Length: 219
Image 1 (cartoon, rainbow, N blue to C red):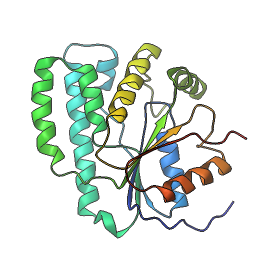
Image 2 (cartoon, helix red, strand yellow):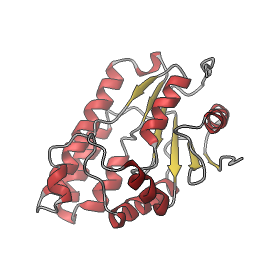
Image 3 (cartoon, rainbow, N blue to C red):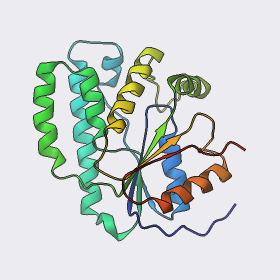
Image 4 (cartoon, rainbow, N blue to C red):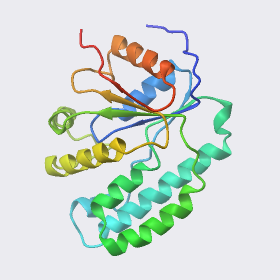
């Protein structure tokens, strides 16, 4: 199906949510729909295997690598003149702290937070964040249906996914830094369905300031 690209007031849109919710695939679809540039997180991390194996010190190494990688990506956005075109990304820079506070001890957090505060000064703020929300059971089911993707062989356990999902919910409950559209995704397929995607586009185009909660139609 062919569409005319949607005209947007928002130039920098970030799609966020816990692992398995479909944020990367949706970011790619929205970028195509808006005739925008898709900026996707590089999930490669040489310390990730050690982290899932629970090797001592690996959480701190993993977190610092992701923080520096995300910061480098944000600098690339800024240097490329972010506002010359619409950008849709699947990674909010502040997301990094969600994982840091979940995985690091107090001493590690002290060092991490000082570095984070320094790097965050360079990061452009999105015009809109779309938070894809789903219960943990749905996330676990989606990950099982995907199987073990060769490009992403390390998947969090159901228990770890539950903790991450709860951390995301807490973070976005208190999020006020940008306009926020919270989308309940447990009963709708935004990755493949055309009608749900168009309904979401209408919600995005209508977004002003503050927070809005959106439950997509299932019929």
